[in-house]
Image (cartoon, rainbow, N blue to C red; front, side, top):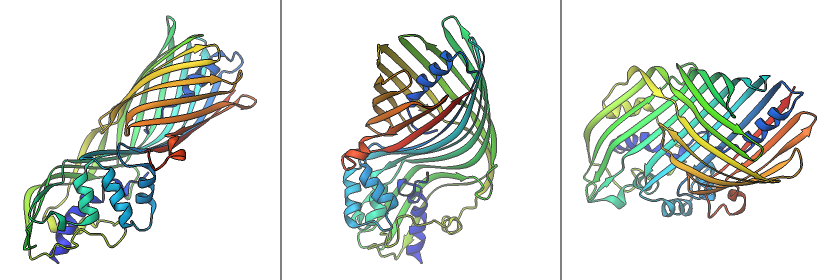
Length: 415
């Protein structure tokens, strides 16, 4: 019984780590400038409608092959465990997101555009210590006689829907845009493990667990758990040779209602526990945690609270210079209010003809390290355009040495 109790406590934290990742994302969208310029230069079109969807996953340490094996395999082998552990550093980051949407642009004149959109966004960000994963995979016997530091650990899973209305007005040689969004909060899971120290007595006579943690989650039975507001700004200069786009997207908040919130800051002492396999999984790494059991072990009751949470805000700048059919570009991106490393990139593109283009992007940062993207886009039938961007294209070529994978697809129609 004691063994189950101490195991349940840390299973709460372990189950929210990258081994159970669910599905804004970290897509660079090289097609954006091409599509906007195509629509701007089309004298017969007054409306464009775009359908878009994509996902991406990345980590700054574990390879794509290791991550796929660990996430999707029915059982985790000893070799998989040790490969993952050898790749981790003392602190690690992982991010996974997906979004889908429809965007309509109406050209009132060559100087003014109106934009409307419906979007669904899901983002997960996790910042964790190697010790936590090592404890989950190999058990605590190896830590006997010593105190192991498992924190800090930060986890956020945010899902929301967005209704967007905006306008772009030509001012000088560029377009200044502003937009406003109403937000529906669908799901929020947040865990902030400020302190988590585990001590296992040398002979297994007792275990001490000292923790300071805040954990909150929304109602799993409803997709309407909060409401909010955000605003976006942009500046676009789209010239014959030089193109510059600056964006601030989704600066806002969601007021989440009736969040189940757990808070504890104390030391737990358990006696008479064998330490061979307390945390050693014989079952799948995707073990579910029964929160009611964790609640009884910790001796705390959840409180129902409303909480205002900032939406992940994306800051980006993109530049593209055209030399005949060749384009050379660079840019930077950062996402506020989540665990994210500022990203920089360089890009080259080539116009295959008047309607088709290809692009190669090399970046560093975001949720990972160095990454590569390959994109292709163009006109498929009359007034219909298609683009695909393979994110972290190295996953297809050298998955054992690189991290990350993803894809972004956009279909647009001019009317």
